[in-house]
Length: 147
Image (cartoon, rainbow, N blue to C red; front, side, top):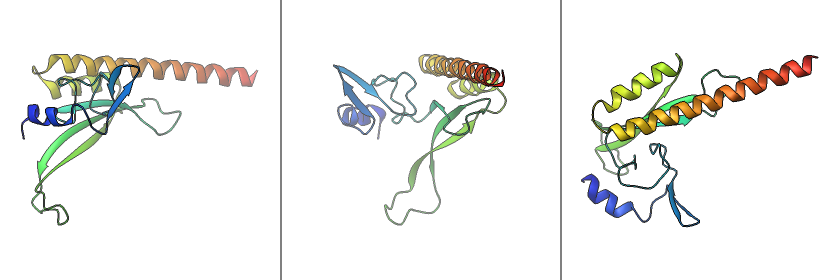
């Protein structure tokens, strides 16, 4: 199906839709803006990437994961749904710093969809800053406990 037809079907009612105080927001992991719009809805597009915080160790240096959406055709058909096309997401953990993650985002979007590329980079920077503040507060708390 085309993306515009999918958008018309799901724009008013989907699992990621949140309506509060007159705002229409989205909790889609591939939506880096948080706003429910055609251009930023990631579960519809074929080439989407999301920036999400990790839910693992507290003392982890980089707590950001990149979630890339891919659609592939499997050779074996799923027996329950009889579907040959399946959508899955691969998670790329950021082990080598924020610059490596920004390079992955830039290569993934290329020269297409520059608005989404900027939104993903903006979210990556915000999560990195929040992580730095959290680490700074943890260090200050451990120093205060030692005294």
